[in-house]
Length: 184
Image (cartoon, rainbow, N blue to C red; front, side):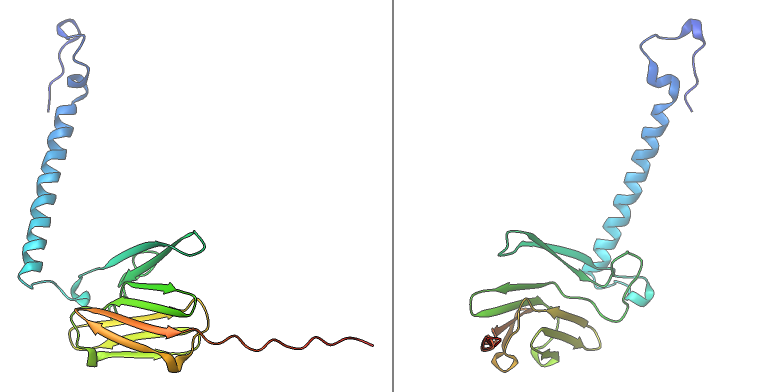
């Protein structure tokens, strides 16, 4: 601890020494040093494949992507195994990063599901949703994607390469318009 000088010996320009800021900065340096050691150890363990399972306290994955939609507004999509409100950890399934794009005649869904074979991916589509599920010993993914419009489930085509799943769906043909009735 820095000893304070008596008032008569005090340097009038040494304000910070009187308050003991040297100790605070030394403590910050020590905390940053320990944090850097911890992060280096985590990275080394991850590179060597020694990461704990979610049941053992890790890894925790949370992310989000922002895309500007056709309406000009930003759309935020969350992914990972940490649910909104942080603290709710899904130990079973990880939510993959998903991007949905709509054109005049189709809807395209791209999802990142690395580390699995295409045979392990289970897809189910309805007029309004696409469900992606992977349940293997090492990887578990689950995401129910709400589609921006009605699609024809029979038109679905999917490809999977290098951890990226692409699904294309044709938009449903609009229902025939009703007939206007004149009241007599």
